[in-house]
Length: 183
Image 1 (tube, rainbow, N blue to C red):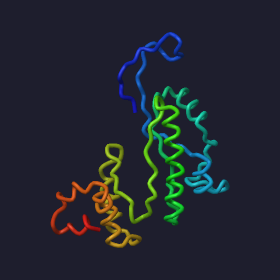
Image 2: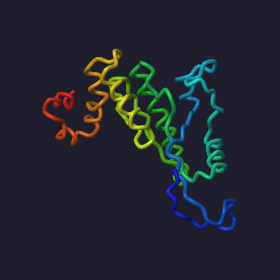
Image 3: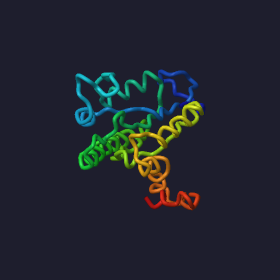
Image 4: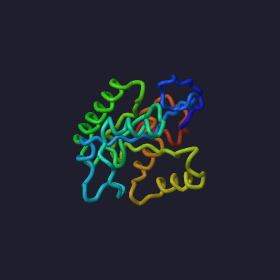
């Protein structure tokens, strides 16, 4: 994502004299601790075997792609693999690594925290404005009607879990749906 603000580079900079400041808000980190806990080298999640990750490799990539700042997050499948305790431990470990990266290079990194959520704590997201409206509607319909989710789980995904994070929004919940804000 380019914010389009113009900066003047000094003559030592290899980039052009005038450049756009670029912030990558979808930049995955795949540290070894995360990779070992969530993947099998012979069958990686998503079917793609990424290159080994390091701070140096990500900085090199950012420099080559002329990315000024990366807002990092871990990748699929997240930290919850079915064991709540292991998910909390892995989330803490990857968050500590991310915090260290930000402490060392606050000029280059920000980060989204890894949260140890299982299905009962998933949040609905429309991915607006990137997802077509009809696909967002279909996604919501799938959550509402999925045979894999109980009605309480689908209500939690659609609103209940978010209301736990943002309790001030509970006042906007229609009376017939007030139970989801207490779930």
